[in-house]
Amino acid sequence: DVSHLNAVVRMARELRPDDPELKLALQLAQYGAKLAPQYQYAGTPPFSEFYPAHQHYLRALLGENVDEASDYFRAMLTDDVSETNNKLTALALVDLYEKLGRAQDAIDLAVKYLTEGVEGIGFSVGDLCLELGRLDVYRDLARQQENILAWTSALCELAPKPGSTPPA
Image (tube, rainbow, N blue to C red; front, side, top):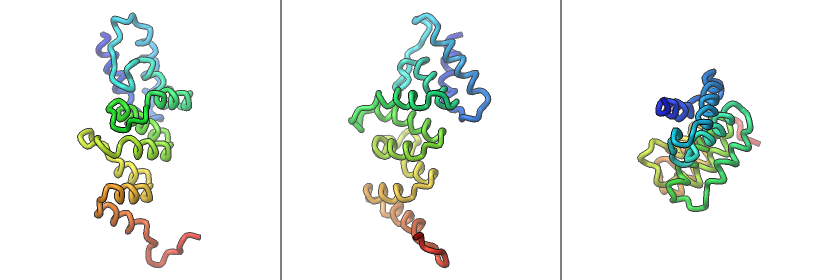
C-alpha cells in the first residue's frame, strides 16, 4: 500500500544515525522513487519531491553524501526569513545537522530562520542553544529579543564559578 510506504518513509526522518532501521528506510525511499508518478504522493517543503528528498536526508544520516544533502536542502532556502517554506526547510536542516553533530551549522541556520514565527511547532532556538551548549548564542539571542530572564540566566551560567580558574 503506497500510503503506508509514504508514511514509513516520512517517519524515518525521526531515526538517528546509529539506528539499524535507517538502511531499510533508505531502501524503501529508493523503492518509492521507482513507483509510477500516480503512486507518489506530493510532500511538503523541503520534501516536495518526496522520495528523492528523503533519499538525500537518509543517506546523510547514514554518513553518505552529507555535503550533497546539505547543498540539496540549502538550495531551497531564500533570504526571506519569514517565508514558511524557508522555515520548514531550515527546521529539517537543523534537525539533520543536530543529528550529525554539526552544532555550529544547526545554530547558524536556526538563528537566521527560526527565531520568529515558530512558536506553535514546538521548536525553540533557545532550547537548541542550551542543548548544544552554546550559552553565548543563547545570551545574544535573549538580549536581541529583550528577554531579561533568559539573558540573566545565560550571564550567570557564563560567569566564572567561584574557585575556578578563569580561561586564559
